[in-house]
Length: 227
Image 1: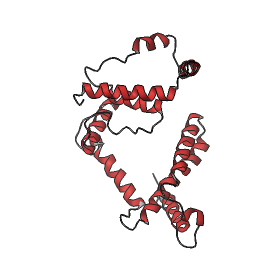
Image 2 (image 1 turned 180 degrees about the vertical axis):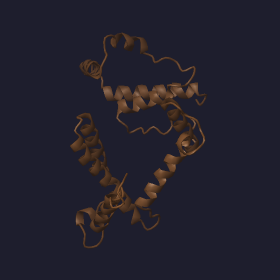
Image 3 (image 1 turned 45 degrees about the vertical axis):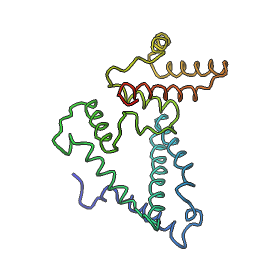
Image 4 (image 1 turned 120 degrees about the vertical axis):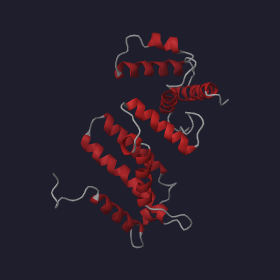
């Protein structure tokens, strides 16, 4: 049981908002004051990748630090948006938006929808999201700027439950190549070897996977009757 004298979870977050307000206000930090959404993009991407690296290295102390750096980016962008003269919004609007979204997309928790498995929850999530966004294809909304492998994973994941979807063109070849591959290390070694072999033949893996994903999206849309 939590003692009434214990700080409420999130109180230090409010302190972070106050610190950012001080940095952006007159008399604060000149560097922070001149930043824009555009100028912070590189830092947002960098902090996201550093957070991923901390997770992959199972470094919990570093992960705590990197999550703080990532959180700073959210607070920073929200503070900049608050200063917009035409359409200002605040960190509270950001929080309100995600709270509303989480409640709406978890009807099995906050409503009367049944979803007993993770697969059912995921299917409900995508269905609700598609309705909210007015999307037609399951692949709509996948950011094209994602790294090629991440983008490919999203395309495959979103389309895994579609009926009458043709098999991947090189599925048989991939099955043979994966014989004996039972863990991430072996899978990574295989992918690295493919990249190396491609480079030797003048092929770029990033471009090849990205183009293959685009072709797969066309196949998916055709299966959905959207082509």
